[in-house]
Image (cartoon, rainbow, N blue to C red):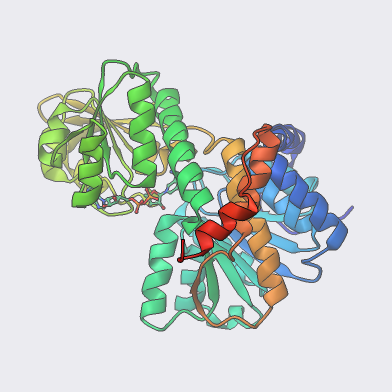
Length: 420
Ligand SMILES: NC(=O)c1ccc[n+]([C@@H]2O[C@H](COP(=O)([O-])OP(=O)(O)OC[C@H]3O[C@@H](n4cnc5c(N)ncnc54)[C@H](O)[C@@H]3O)[C@@H](O)[C@H]2O)c1
């Protein structure tokens, strides 16, 4: 078999990648059903897909389902640190998918890979953070000539798309997969919560019980992270800018403080806001000796890294894998994990497959819907079509062996009538 064009670290890792992908597949029963259906119905026959996503075993299973449905796929990484080189090799050598991604690649390679997948002139675009769509709109609009639509996977990407749409520059219908209940309630909350702590613990082997963990941002991700940290015995401090979210945190029993008061108290500080400069120079200056800084928001802008670099008199790279130590003038040491990029993907393996089963099943069914609607949709940010979310949640419950009640006809009448 001729291998597809690609740029990965080592094709010799393919068998290790297959084992990783198959292990993840075991926890993805709904996506497996979608895959079987796609293989029978071929809803994506003749469609070219350009994807910018984390190159992980879970993504591999999504792309296998789309490929089984007939799609021809090119994948670039959506983060330089999250690529699993063995998964990338398996995608190319075993699953016939073009991959342009290497763990730890430099920013120039990252950008070049985005351009390479766009140069396939895709019909469908799968983005995670809006980098592909952004590049196409800013520099290479001609490459979207065949595109009928796409999906966006994360909160930050959807925010960027909505800004483009409001300015009237977005040229494609883009579905906000992030905004479904199954994605936000389970993937952002339980997935990010668990995997962020997993990344912090792998990178530091730190004890969480009895320590003070500062969670910046009490959105879907932050709420999950705060719950998991508290579950491990941490004292959790939440910082927020939204009064409603802050009040929610107070009602859930967390200490809520402005960052200038939270920073000196924290043993571990994690940003997950989707915003920039959440931990700034004045906060960095007040950190405890040995404080651990991590980010789980989409971009590496939540901690002011240039300020940290400027304050340091010595920087000790990789005191442990994915942990750099910054020594301040008075001798205090600050430990930064995963270079301030997504810690759950840089220092751990991202979300567990079981939670990605739902997000990626929604995404696969949405891609098939976009292919069917081919060309009939107006540019803008669209919701996932009604029904897909409920269908996926129902299949997930079935896979877990959990039964629920059905509305009786009388109950349906009662709920739909205003006369009673
Ligand atoms: N690590 C992962 O695997 C993963 C998974 C999903 C989403 N994300 C990313 O995580 C980020 C958050 O996603 P979400 O779904 O929780 O978003 P969200 O909109 O539900 O929550 C973000 C919260 O941060 C708060 N916030 C904004 N600026 C702040 C500031 N300066 N200080 C304190 N709080 C502030 C907002 O008020 C909001 O409550 C996004 O960048 C998203 O793309 C990461």
